[in-house]
Length: 171
Image (tube, rainbow, N blue to C red; front, side):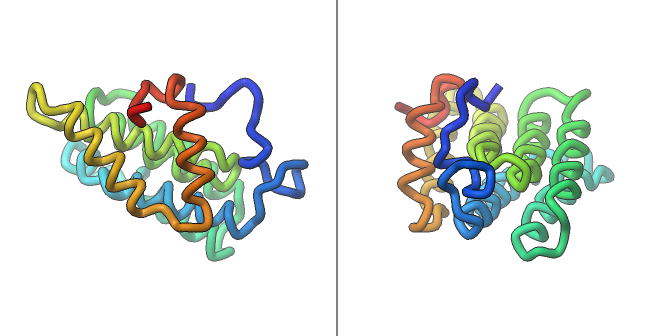
């Protein structure tokens, strides 16, 4: 479970009573898609014939451009998570990262799920004894990709939700 019981109004769009602008919502979706895409190969090497995680990432980006509706992006995210169900390890986590990225269109707070699952994927793929270091490098890579406009929000969100995101953000 990567979503808190009480929603952070900074991650709820203005039209739904929060303070998140549509522009920042789109930036969060693009960042989540980048995080998921960075580890997508870990899924595709296990299931090269299954397009669902890649499609979820593509739908997340298409949503930011207004090319698909929120429900389509969310459904693609759900399908990507379905691709993870019978897998284990890095491939499973990578598919979940893609699924979370697809769901950002619906709930912006899924942005951290994409990042956290990507870190879990990298940790699981690392040689024995190197998972923690690999996870820290992935977390830093992700932070380097953050758009300036949402950087402080995401970093604070990582701090606040680190405990429910398997402590992958090193706080």
